[in-house]
Image (cartoon, rainbow, N blue to C red; front, side):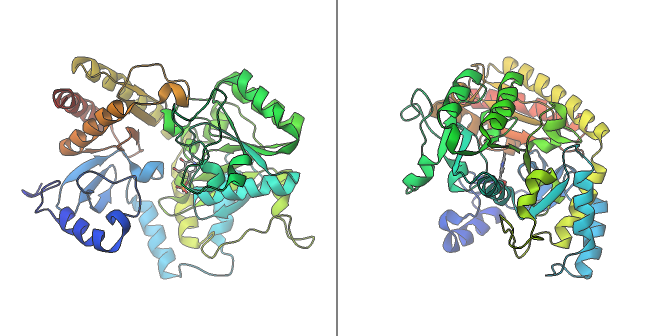
Length: 441
Ligand SMILES: Cc1ncc(COP(=O)(O)O)c(C=O)c1O
């Protein structure tokens, strides 16, 4: 570790941030890694660890927000990508790696027959919603309150509603200023896991609904898994009212070789994938049975939904994605379940020892720490006050100083590159960081 380090004003991270602030709004591109007083700038990553520009190595529990299932620079991915880069990075023509990744994805889940790629999860969500509209000829979508489905007006409705505006039944609240009224009117918001209320709200709009989009374990409230009764209702009611059931597995595809749908026996019409299927490169995909995916098929003239993109299915992403998925077996996923349980049990104990008024939630390789101890079942019960969020921000900052990266919001992810000793080190550091956060008031 160098003597000068984050958040030292003489650090290289500070120097880079000063330059960045001259040429980018707020000096950043993504809000997620923003860190007061300035972000830690990464230089390199290897396996479970990332090294910053000042030479400090930390355990990376961010994993580019859940996209690096094998950690950084996995040797097999690096060498295949290097070979592909030397052969060309992007073609207007289709390529073999595109076919190979599509075959790999279809081979992992029973209902996956056809794939359409995009460049990000947000794009794929947008694509799936457009597909549902083209299939049904309707415009409204249903989403759960406080659930993130990417950066897209419709998908963002009621993402951060608060007690001041959320209403008894969830009100449709625009995320950014200037969200068109038409967008809000076309998004029906339901409470996650409240089967009865959600069914009533959906049925009240039944003739106008194109799609119901569900994340089976939303990150915004600590990866609480969807209840069996809720998801069964969504499946049944979607079919009854003629809407398309879209499952957003952008993050949760990691919880089993065949995603959360295999783990929890969910049968959506369309699935949205991204993150781990790109092996560390930008990616997104809509997947489903031929019956629904036919909407993209151009062979009888103009498709019902034309969908394209300059870098879509580029061979670098496709090559990396196939190797990442081939390397991610059921045994890996099972091992991450065990490692995740070890971490959550250890962090729970660490919080108790440190008298830290928080909790850790999640399952499998996903977890989130909260600055409160209320039972989290949905967005409202997970909702943190400003003070509670500040407590987590303090804990996170102390963890950076201890050598661990988690998100400021308390979210984090394991990778197959992590070991029991990495997790035990994190638990010990969490106890110190929590104690410190408590003493910081
Ligand atoms: C559940 C979910 N859906 C969609 C997205 C958007 O994916 P991307 O960031 O690749 O656009 C995310 C990103 O974190 C996500 O967590």
